[in-house]
Length: 480
Image (cartoon, rainbow, N blue to C red; front, top):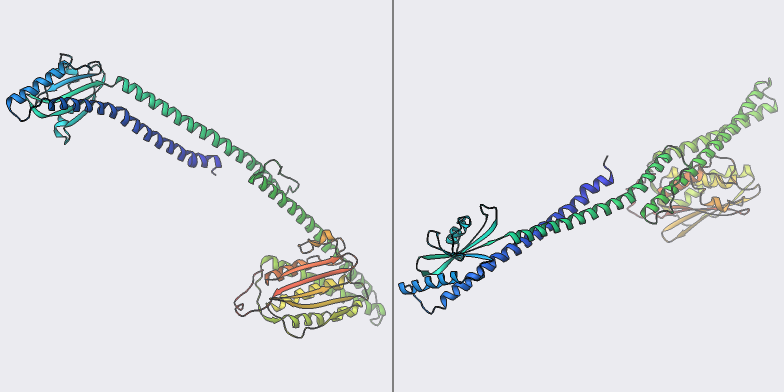
């Protein structure tokens, strides 16, 4: 597994090093051209001066007298050369042999010869050669062909030592190399400092996340230490841990609640089974009452198990098989379905059916489940003799079904959580506590939303809002 530091070393630092190397190469190239090229240009300018003097003789043509005059002028220039401390000035014949030198002696160590032959083959008539003498001295030789006949003189040659130039060159090399090394070192130091400022807190985040993944939901990160993306990441992970803790708490409460809800009817069934088993006369009043209780508690268990199974199916993903439905008719059918339950609990339903249909695109079975769950909750939380109000309204491109009871209401702290799975509020009564979670999942999958409004001691209103049907939705099959 690659670390961020290793990736940075192979990526950003390598690119930085390549850029520095390229900049170093370009800088040294121009320095070399400026330094050694400057020496060569200085020598070429002296040749121009010498040739200018030949032109100043006032003679022209290629006669023997003119040629001899030029040769004499060149020899006189060599004898009177005043830069002997910088250059060695030579005159060469057509074979490249030295005819005269400014020092008066012919130094064979300075006879490289390549500059002369390069001058012969060059269109400019100038050739350059850099070489080491037998004594190890680094020198530059520049030869320029004489453009006029001058007796036996064919070319002029200047030779100079490069010792000072080499010293300056290596000073530039070391200086630029040092600057590049400092820049690379600073980039390495600053990069590692920055990377570590990220890697260290990320390591802490990783360790904390691993502890949370192993079940230690009480672990938290210091989310106030960093006022940047890492701080926000720490805050997000802490929020995740809070949500996981809350979910774990609600799950445990859910299991406890469901266990209690299952145990109560099972205890009642078991007790009445034992009572009936001890009765010899089927006409006994307790016999009939026992069967009624067993039947009612069995229905209660069946409804609870179906609700749990529905919730499990929704969590695993269910495809809705939608069709065009009349929301008014579906709500009316749900009201009729629960009418017997209302009479049994001593409640009344206040409902006025709208005169026109509200077409929606929905799964009939799931929509019926939404209405039954909401109405069942309203019945459970309504006092005897109370009323449940079912209202359908149409606003723009949406239709809303509201179910209001006159029950105990929902605490403000629980209002935003009652749609969460496993959550049961402080005023909750019997049931699994997942009815509204199922309702919200189905309504959301149908493209709508569920809202709640509640006041303690006065009741709760559930609003189910769905988009009205428009042609073109037939191809949709909403997954949950």
